[in-house]
Amino acid sequence: MTITDEQLKEQILSKNEHRIDIEAEGFVLGGMMKYPSIIPEIVSIVGNDGMGRGDHRVIFEAVMALYADDVPIDVISVARRLKVDGLLGRAGGAVACNALVENCPAEENITYYAEIVKDLHVERMLLDVNKIIPQVIKDNLSLSEKLMKIDKHFSDIIGLAGKYTPLTHAAQVNTTLDWWDNQFDKETAYEIPTGFASFDIETLGLHRGEYAIIAGVPSAGKSCFALNIVLNAWLEHKIATQIVNYEEPVRMIHLRMASIISGVPLAMVRAVCNSPNAQIKKGDTKYTQVVEALQSVADMPYPIVTQPGPNIAELKLLTKRCKKQDDRFGILYVDHIQIAPAIEGQREYDKVTEFSMGLKEIAIASDIAVLGISQLNRAVGNTPKLENLRSSGGLGQDADLVCFLSNVSDEPQDDKTIRKILNIAKQRNGPTGDIQMDFHTDCLRFVEI
Image (tube, rainbow, N blue to C red):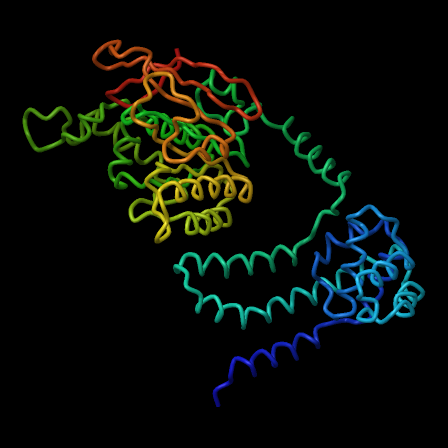
């Protein structure tokens, strides 16, 4: 027999009602009114919508409204707030509020009952999956957006089921102190060293939870500079990068890596053939150097992602999988922002703005460094500014670090080396300024002067 949507809804509601511990909810509410100092800890456990019974939800919301307004909380102030809002009857009246306070257990036991309330709330959320998934499938969204909505629901469940830090500033300060103390165990002050000493001194390397942009005109070397950073992080410190490249095939990225690591010119690596005049012969020294270079990165945990590349919704899902897969995950490298795919119907400005905001969200949510490559408007010259970032003013606003890569002069230093300026144009938590580098165009290596 086919079950209608309405019958399914009734079944779910019926099941949900059996996943409510009325007594535990009452103990928690009574404790919040009798011992208001525990409210932050209780909220950190049960969340803002953990109460299952209707009258309990009304009382909980009244308590939280008073707490937000910094009004002293007790059974009288809560009843008064409910009366002003016209909700006292729905809460069972002042008598019901008094009964909750009178029957509540000792203060030190309230969190035990809060955990019970939370666990049942999680079970009700799991039951809600039965109705949320069919609704999402019916929505007029792309497949990746549907997956993101479903993934968010499961993330909320997992987050609620986990242990929470009490929502007090003292607890947050302790968390920060724990992190800071752990920094003293590190060999370097740099969170994610880039391999460029002057750059690391100015920026303390790349940072987890932060979003950095390397920008320049076409062929400025911005992608090569970022790839140098990615390789240095892996080869020297085993910090893994998820590379997402919307512009080049995997093979070309591997050949670039091989040239940077081995020092064998890229043109030579690409021009191999079975000819007496070939500059690389199978089995010779240069051949061995290229093979060893690629083998040195073969154990990087994440395969390179290229076209058709992920939009921002898909990229968020990809990053979550990387985070779960390997605890060495430290960098998301995106090349480049302006050619990332749009959601159907999006304008270019809206796409880049949303994509940039999404990269910032990924950095914070996954606690990784995001390294994005950005184009500049064409007529910029050698002194770009934040407003010259192409397609969206939001790029300079979202990023924690923005660096512009440009030539010191239009004349090359020699046929293999170009002097570059890396201009730190914005650094949210540090200085700005210029760093000079030599770019060895034959093997794509950057070397600080």
